Amino acid sequence: MEAPDLLNPERRMLLQMQGAEVRSWSLDEILNSCNWSDQAIAVGAGHGLENHGFVSVEEHLSTLVDLDDEGQRALNNGLLEQRIWDWVKARDQATMKDLQGDFERHEAGPGIGLLKQLGVNLEHGVLQATDVAHLEKVLSQRRSFLEQLPAQLESLDDAMLDHFRQRRGLIHQVDRTQRTWTMTEQGQSVPKESLIEQLVVSEITPELLQSDAWKEAVYRSFDVTLESATPRTGRSHPMQSLIERIRSVFLEMGFSELVDDYVQTAGWNMDALFIPQDHPAREMQDTFYLTQPSQIELPTDLMNTWKSIHETGGETGSTGWGGSFSNETSQRALLRTHTTVNTIQYLAKHPTESCRVFSVDRVFRKEAIDRTHLPEFHQIEGIIMEEGANLQMLVATLKTFYEKMGYPEVRVRPAYFPYTEPSLEIEVKWRGKWLELGGAGIFRPEVTEPLGITSPVLAWGMGLERLAMLVLGLDDIRQLYISDIEWLRQQPIL
Ligand code: PHE
Image (tube, rainbow, N blue to C red):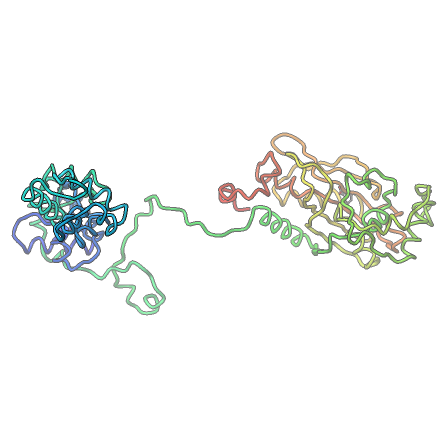
């Protein structure tokens, strides 16, 4: 017969069986003769040998009756009825009153109940047995019943079982499957040489690889088609991964990242951007104004410049918005409503250096929460300042960005922002529909000239959550932040 390819435990078990007389083996016999302590190894080896047809396995279902907690205690201290009977025998006049003094209430009551069933009576308050011999026989039968445990259900006396089953906590039953293994003729004919155990490598270690031993080693084979549990490891939140991806796209395109505070003044958030002070977006329903601090001081000459731009257009050739500009309004503290508040300050600090800057950061607006709105969300913001920058370049940059993000179809439409001219709306095509993702434009002279900026500035701001909804195929923006662990685990790696 050809040598079968057996695992080491299978070899050992079959070799042991071949060396003994034909018989069926119990688990303990296998463990002993194979020198194993883990029964899973024996069961596994038996199963493997059975698959080869070298052993046959028989399963016996059996029920074992064993002592429960109370039963163990009864075995140590005596059954309750025995202890009370001993107490009765120890005195001439065993009165109910004394009994209640010597035993706890929870024992005296049930104990008397048990003895009454065995013919003990109360005569004028004194306990007496009608048939002592019978009583003591039953007591000793009960004791020997408990002493037999654990035992197979079939071997036990039915009447005793019924009795003890009705008493709480004395005995319990355990169902067991017992196996026996018997070698088949085919198993007997497996040549001894093929049952020699081999050194099998199941783990490849650096030591093994450094020596030459790996060349000669026998490797354990693994069935990679078997189902297995998916290991669950930590991972970034999908929003975080998306931000990382956006970062790398901008970095690839030659931009550097700007990170700045979200506590700002109305001056930088709005006035610097030529948003008129009576603009509806400034009202309480859109902007979170702070109470502490409620004002943040700004340099007077900065506010004076904005004042003249807003009231008359300053030196820019614009006519401004008219009305009267309030420094008080300008210095109100707020949570930024857009990240343009940061790019404009970056430009104010570096008015003459060409730059490409982006940010992905949080903004705040007083919005009611619904499927498409959150009061706190993120914007993807960017600016390019350089000589000769123009609209075509702006559109090309936005297209490149979305193309790299996986949305090749982009279009722009005319829009309006107080700080850009021309102004655009950016849309991408998703599942056959055009979706608006943000605004863009070239900063107006009313914005750039007071800051001493001479080159054109291309600027845009887009919603990150909107984009995330596209990428993750969501129709409810709230899903992004409810931390549903199952949903998070199922998200694709971005
Ligand atoms: N700040 C605008 C917004 O919040 C977007 C924008 C940025 C538009 C820059 C034009 C230029 O929607």
